[in-house]
Image 1 (spheres, rainbow, N blue to C red):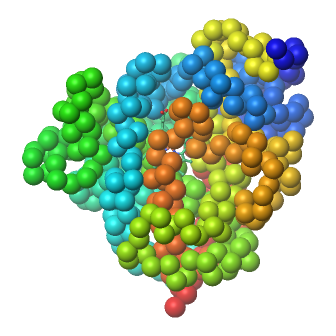
Image 2 (cartoon, rainbow, N blue to C red):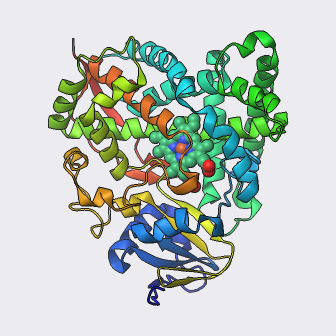
Image 3 (cartoon, protein in one colour):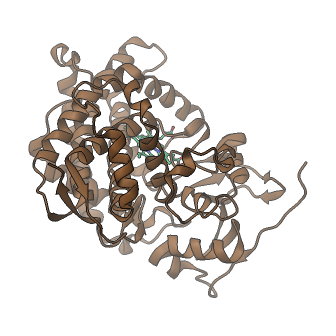
Length: 440
Ligand code: HEM
């Protein structure tokens, strides 16, 4: 039994607590409270208290050791329905059992040529010596990849409309996602547009399910076709089209923006750290992207280190919450049923209690044996425990291939590091502006 402990509370202003600061920039507030109060603290927001836990041992308790007691409740439920991202307990287990095997090596290997083709298409259209927002470039690539590999039919004509819909939906849901209480409807003025975009997205997905149901279409290897197949083959998985839709929409949202943001932060870091960029270029310059086997990507240790170091400093999924189902004790800290707990890779991975020189960009720390990396949950950009990101391997391979391809063609020139802006994912206030210069 651990010794009892208490953690400090930031009360903020009377009645509203820290509501205004939290709404304005929750990352800035949480980071400054972490500096002031330490890695674990409570914070009053409006009428509720949020418990922020950032020591690796506390995070491990919530995400792994007693994960059954900490359930997910997000604003995204209304969009994702009852898919793998949003459900809990037995309902989640069934979904996970269905979706996880579909992301096996055979599926991922079959996605490689698609990733390479979509990347090549966009990279060849990119001009040299012109400033661009690299996020837009990567989002276009990862979006086309997710449509081709998850939905499996050509929707390139619909790109603008789909992109607009996903962004509108995401903005609307993010507005209240991290608040421990609901805002009144009137504050969420974009509800109508959200409803229109959701309707459009549903139409696209249901149409795709219909197309994929035809025998001919089944030959391709999209996630929808694999789900439909699993649905037919497994007696205990009686998923109707609605459930397939819920999972497909979850994978689309979870899968395209996270990879694009990681690539955008990474490119800006390489622009800032030219010596790292050159060392990485030396490692990947002769890598043959035309005939890749997944195992070839394991032979690039510096590439791994640069991606990990980027995800340590700028984890696309920067924080999430859980609700305690029953009273609990986390390493001596009492937690009451109904309490909302926030864990954040951003806070843990930049904690001076956990990492040496936490704010410096140093990929070599992932190559040299660094004790911090061995401490479980000191690095968890893909989450952890049984709910660890189901698309982790897919995302890692996608990021590697896109980056290798881009770096073989272009050099990132020196630019300014953007300021993080915390939406549901870690975006930037001013975009990701960089100049790319053709290498040949
Ligand atoms: C760099 C890329 C990615 C990052 C940083 C990332 C991050 C994360 C994180 C932090 C979680 C855990 C959230 C939580 O516990 O509340 C998660 C879960 C999830 N991710 Fe990813 N992800 C990435 C790519 C992908 C891709 C490519 C897909 C699918 C195509 C995907 C699908 C999912 C799903 C379905 C879950 C929910 C799993 C569950 O609850 O059982 N992710 N991801």
